[in-house]
Image (cartoon, rainbow, N blue to C red; front, side, top):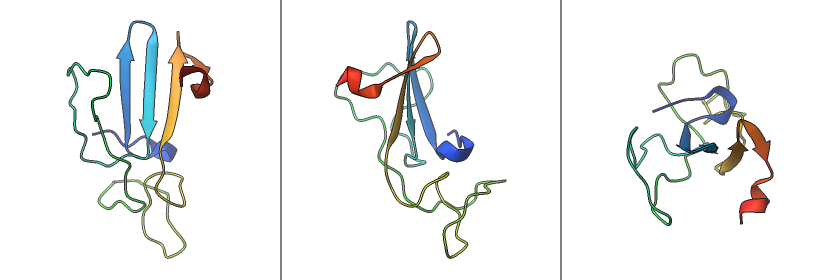
Length: 93
């Protein structure tokens, strides 16, 4: 499990020179470090808005409840990098 500040719970897949990062996901990942994944495999679910028990989480909603990173609601933030250079994710869909 990885809580990545503003990205909340985050999962990164790495292969060759590529890294695909999924942010604000459910803290109960469906894959583990070292797993091989296949195209179409479910690796995680979109996370809840609020998460509890994260030490040092500075992000809060309007009621003071801790959020899943810098977010106002459940959503998926996806990042694509090639050789550590961010790419437009739409180029891959």
